[in-house]
Amino acid sequence: MVKEIVSVFTDVPEGIFIDATIGLGGHALAVNRNLPGKFSFFGFDRDGEMIELARENLPRDFRLRKMTYSKIPSALESESIGPVTGALFDLGLNSLQLENGGRGFSYRERSLLDLRFDRTSGKPLHKMVDKFNLSELVDILKTYGQEKNSRAIARAIIDKRPKTTDELAEIVRKIAGSRNFNKSASRVFQALRIYLNDELDEFEKALKGIVPLISKGGRIAVISYHSLEDGIVKRIFRLYSGKCQCGPGKGICECGARKIIDIKTKKPVRPGEAEVMNNPRARSARLRYAEKI
Ligand SMILES: C[S@@+](CC[C@H](N)C(=O)[O-])C[C@H]1O[C@@H](n2cnc3c(N)ncnc32)[C@H](O)[C@@H]1O
Image (cartoon, rainbow, N blue to C red; front, side):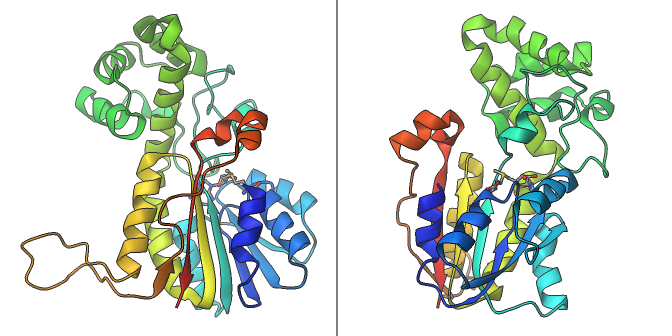
């Protein structure tokens, strides 16, 4: 959604642009090329390998840091970085991570089940898989994968304790059957990745922390690929557009709702047909953005 992203930031004031998920730098580079001189760029990624690749693709004056996005708000505050007039999250993972051997993100490739974005911290999944209990695993597959065979797949994982992508894929194939295999395997791998990297909590903290740091007239855009991510965007945007999230029965508001943004997307922007033809993974992308007031 490169064209759409460039147009989101076309009319914002000059300032700092925060790309919270720099990846290979495609979006940031497009913004820079199409809006020359408007922004100074800061790019972040939890995956140090992506930061190294982005460094090769991007101009030298882009400041790139390996950092999980929940830590960006405190980095901006402690280093007095501003005024921030553009911020972008493009969630999930990129094709290189998915297809690159050894990450364990894809059932299509044989490798150890790692599934961490940052391979220098925390434990890979193949070291955690012995510790799961059934109810915890059913919950992970149901919540993050919305997989209808969650219980059976979880039971088989507990039984076989797979350590590699193909051992896990085989478990899914036996239960889901060949016809449903691709969909079920994608959901199971996605669920385990979201769980292992604590993606939803990380994202919620990041979005909640960054919005207040954007300057007047600046914009924040999020491209999400999962309904739970999109739910967080809707909730945090509503909170900062002044809509109380406390629910019925509360006498006083405790959620911190205040009106500091205008939501620009009542409905999410979806990728055009041509983009989906070119890149089928874009099919589930939803773009929402808001402007600081
Ligand atoms: C879809 S890609 C971004 C692609 C990028 N927009 C581009 O044009 O190349 C998502 C990126 O987010 C990174 N990521 C995932 N979780 C993260 C986190 N908690 N903090 C920072 N980056 C994260 C991934 O490593 C990946 O590089």
